[in-house]
Image (tube, rainbow, N blue to C red):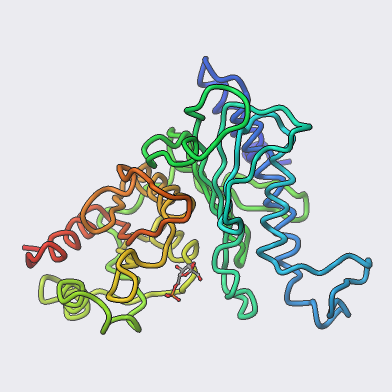
Length: 335
Ligand code: P6P
């Protein structure tokens, strides 16, 4: 292997060694997430072949049950993580209640919150989708973890990341020392360092990303903000880009800059996106890459969660544009 190629495993190990107090448990969790990501990549990348290769119905050519991909991803993540002895509890977008560690396995000091396959409804159109994960240390003392271990503000995350299954499969994560991206080389089954220390470009590309189909449901201030971005009477006009798959829209914002918005509206005042395992992990990545993430008024990372699946409006991207959005939403004109 080329001596300049750094595998994710090596990078994680080197990061661990740079923290004298590291126990290796967080490293083990990240290794297990990487393993799950490779299994999910395999299923997602052949999803388009289900009807072609005679995998229709409920069994594939190996006689294995063909599952809804998000159910499959949910199970793969759980089964990869439940026995390592590093977690005290898990929570998933696909599970209404907490997921305790099976009693036959030891519990550990960490908490894993995840969205196993966000945007999975886009898979039939071959649009990028993703796994999002958030890791906390427990606040309860010993034994099985509980709700209090999950309902922590995003500022207390010890790690966060996502895997985007797209034209290539990319894993992006932070443990607080920069944001780093790795691209899967399927020929060797390794994630290779492709984006060291990602920083949101300043100034970023003038891109705004929001579902304008909801325009009539927005507040007048949200409407004024988007009109401003569209017409550019504040400065140069912006371009509109919206995939409708959170991980894809975020990954573009992280690499190119811009302003991603999922506002609240008169039907859902808290919007659509979930705080614990969508907004908070992406907010940690965004801020560690030099950007900002808010709910339009306050930092996402400072919000004290009250329930597992609570939603939040989400504004993230270049700091100056997220702040401008906040000024509009407060009734100002962003000047
Ligand atoms: P809308 C996908 O269903 C998802 O949960 C996110 O990935 C995405 O950002 C959002 O919903 C898109 O929602 O209402 O614009 O279709």
